[in-house]
Image (tube, rainbow, N blue to C red; front, side):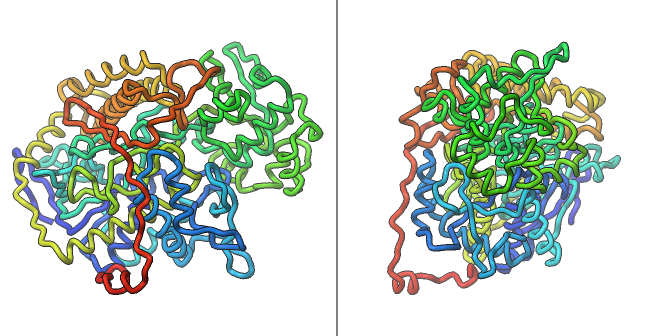
Length: 637
C-alpha cells in the first residue's frame, strides 16, 4: 500500500493485477479460479463479507440449473444451449458457453463440499424447473446459493487471497476506454487527513460481481444488505443489455423470500386486510370457480415468475394470482399468505389431476397447508423460523416483488464489457439471460461467467503487457465528486426516506406493470435528481456510504427507465415478466423484439438504446484432432 496526496487529502492506494468487486458466488469463484490458474496478486473488494444476494436469498428449493447427469433421458450441450437461446434476446455464443461449462462448474462445487443430493449410484438426479422441459434442475434446499458462497469463500480464504472488507466501491477509474480499478469509501479509513474515508484500488483488470440492481425497487425480494452498483458501471461507459427484462413474483415482505414451489403447491389461503382491519379471501373475485382457482395456485409453484404470455393465453392462468395481489395492494389493502387453514371451499376432490397426483405422491393429502408443507418441505418452514416468522401460527405479508434482473451489462464471450476493455461483469450484473430463463440458470451463470472471466484475465496477463497509466486527473475528479457530498446535510433516516421514495416510483411504473405516462414522469424526476445530486445533497462521514448508494440508485433508475421507454417507443409490447400499460385483462405480447438485444449507452447525461440482432448459436468445432492441435492454453486446464 502507498499513500497518495490528492486535494490536500492523504489517501491509501493499493495495486493489484486483478480485483473482484463483490463477495457472492460469482465474485468468489472468479477469485478462486484466478488463484487456481496461477494469478496470485488479486483481491476481493466487498462492502460487507456477509452481505449480498448469494448469501442471503433463496426459495422453497433454490434451484441450480445444469446439464442433465442422471438416468436415461437424452441431453446434450447443444440442447441446453438451445433451451437458453429460446428464451429470446439471448446471444447464442454465450448460451453455448453456459451449457458447455455447466457440468465442469457444477462438479467443482460438489468437490468443494456443496451438498447437492445424489442417489446410491452417484447420479445427481434432477427435476423440472420453470421455462424448461427437461430435469436439469437440482437443489440443496432453500439455501443453495448460501452453501455455494460459503464453500467458495472457504477455498479463497484458505489460499490467503486478500479480501478488503468494508469497502464500498463508488467509482470505476477509466482512461481511454479502459478500466484500471475502483475508488471506494470506507468508514474505517476516515481520518483527519482523509475525512471521506476514500481509498484508491488500482488494477490491470476489474471484475464486477455486484449482483442485480437490487435497491431500485421498493417491492423487492433482494436482501436489504445488497444495494446496486450498476450506476458506477454506466457512468464508466459500460453499455447495458436487455435492461428492460426482469423477473417479478410473489414474495414475503419484512423477511424477504421467494414464495415459490411448495409454498404455493400446498395451497395456502390468500387473504387481504383493508384499512379497517376487515379480512377476506379475495382470489374468488378473479376466478370463475374453485377448481380453476386452486389449479392456478398449485401451478404458481412451478410458474412462480409473473408471465405475460401465460396471461395472454389464459386469463385464468397462474399469473392471474399476481394481478390479484397487485390490485389488492393498489386499493390500499395488505395481503397475506396464511398456512394455518385451508382456503374456503378447498377439497382434494376438486383438484385437477396434476395437483392431486403430486400431493398424493408426496404423501401430502393432509389437513391444512402447514401440515402439507411440513410433509413436503420442512426446510421451507425452518428458514422462516430462523428469521422470526412462525408459519405454523401467523400469516406472512406478501407483494409481487422484483427478484432477478435478466438484463445487465453488455458482455462478450469472455464476460468482458463490450464497451470498456479491462472491465468484466459476472453473475447477475452480466446481461446474458434474455427474456425467459430456466429457474436456476442464474446460479449456473455465476459460475460459468466467472470462470470465463478468470480464463480471459489469466491469458491476457500471460500474453499481453499491461501498464497502469498515470491516473492523477481521473483520481482527482473522483475524489472531488465524493468529497463534495461530505457535510452536515441529510441524516440516515432522511437518506432512507429518499431511497424508499425512489423505490416506490420504480415499483409503481417500472416493475411488472408499466404505465407509459408514469414512465415519462419518472424519467424527468430521476433526471433532475441526477443533475443536481452533488449540489443538492450531503451527509457526514458516518452516512456518506448510504448517500453514495442513493446516487447510484438515481443513475441506475434513470438509465433503466430510459431503456424501457426506448423499447416502448420502438413498438415493444408486453413480454416476459411485465405488462406494458395498465390493461391486464387483454394482454397482447411482443412478437418481434425476441430476435434483438437492446444495447443501452449512457454518456453521463443522455441515454440511447439500439436494438441489435442477437448472435446465433455458433457451429462449434467438433473434430477432435483440430481441437487437439489448436489448444495451446495449459494454464486454463
